[in-house]
Image (cartoon, rainbow, N blue to C red):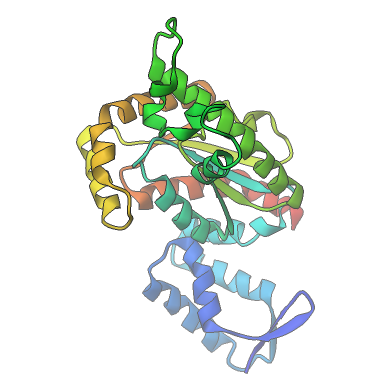
Length: 293
């Protein structure tokens, strides 16, 4: 039986734990266990091995297979918890664009335990502020125009949406501040993650990656509401009735993303989107991780 030495403690070597750690790479389970079995055979007569050596063996196995990008994902991501400044990934986009699904999958791949959803923050704020005081909080993003009374507003939908984003941002910012203070890697997602409102570009106390997701094809966007309704209690009909307003907000958020330096991703495939973000994060933070280890 081989023991793994980590942080001064000894634990039995676990093929399951090692295979789980390889999920970072995105490799199929069969390919992951192929590597695990090889390493297990190599450790057959080893009494104690340092966790660093196991990590190095995995990296070597990946390189031997020509899996350079997967090796980078594994090497960098395994060290993200040791960053001196926390990692924040921000995902913006309209309803039905795939933000929540992407957040969960991305958190799994990057071993991030905190997901901050702006809809949750808005719901908390609704219980603290009355509808008479801040009516835009009590509307969906795509019908905030119902609360706009100003006659001189050119686009009541965008104006109302901006009001809602401004209010919700005041609730999201302290949550981000707390995450930075605690050094917790986090994902922030929601329609209210509009580039420019949270001031992430001006922060030097965290590593921030800001993305805006889009689905250019309206029919595909509409289809996703139906698919989402099959796995939740959200009625697709309500969103389909407001698809034009939702698409208008998408165009606006994308333009704000371009104007504020966010990365725009056409979210046609969740796997491709994850690979894109993983590649961005591990490429930019690779040298940072290397300098801290």
